[in-house]
Image 1: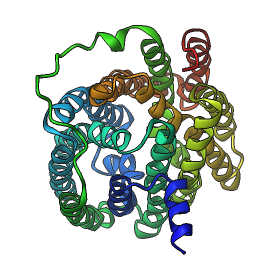
Image 2: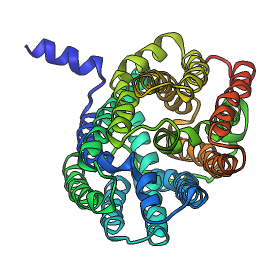
Image 3: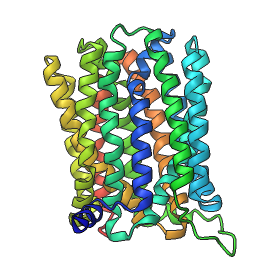
Length: 393
């Protein structure tokens, strides 16, 4: 039995920190994703039109990614663990205030603060993950954490579709309060169980980010910017498109999002695949197949096809996501991983948030289909950059 347990632990790279982050992330995400996927619909219920919705999503997403660089610096200076715990508590407080907001202007700054806290948290979590395992198992570790998060992300919208059947604000509010309580509990568990992985620095780390702007890592960042500018509109507006254009009910939207997200449980397998055939190959395959399945989803003739195509789209998204995280870490100096993932996420995320705003405007000017088609087309130049300028490492 013990040998079986050790084999299982080794297969999924379940070191102590990975297990703690994974289980607490599972609990917190299970609660929050009962409403996260429906957040654009909730903001519309509070009075926002499609352009105002785009502004809110763009601003909160911009802050989330712009602040990941400071988050990385803090994680490298103060340690991974304190950042993870404090940011979890701040995020919990913002969820409570989202639940008592009465209009979209009130929810605007709350979402900005919420995304700010999560932005500071994410580089610390990624750096702790990379620190906790050997390089040969890093893709598997990231895949395992992605799987821990993906199952509740998939189940959450399905549950939310049942809990908010009439799509009225009063149905959403208890979900915000419950999520805040769960996240506070998870933050306490992390405080008790996580082990700090950052070695104390005898001399201060020089604030030098030049390594990010040369070589393979810079080329990867350029390709990532093209990808996020096009793809993130799809991620933010797909529930709205499904509701207004495809005519899906809240329950059907929940099923659709479930199909697209449940496949994240295969993250460890994709991580192992990237460890074997290379991160670059997995990323390219993921991007190209994502573009094809996005177009197929757009023209779904019924709810069943929309759910099926969105599910396949989720598979290929996972195929590229896990290797991207692992490749950034591989191309970065070990003591600067927090800064590396923070800067990479900040730059690509800021570009992606601009894409969200641009997509909302393009929807308003050219119709609902155009920005989604543009998302698929932009995958091509991203792939070309990755093929030509990022070599295997």
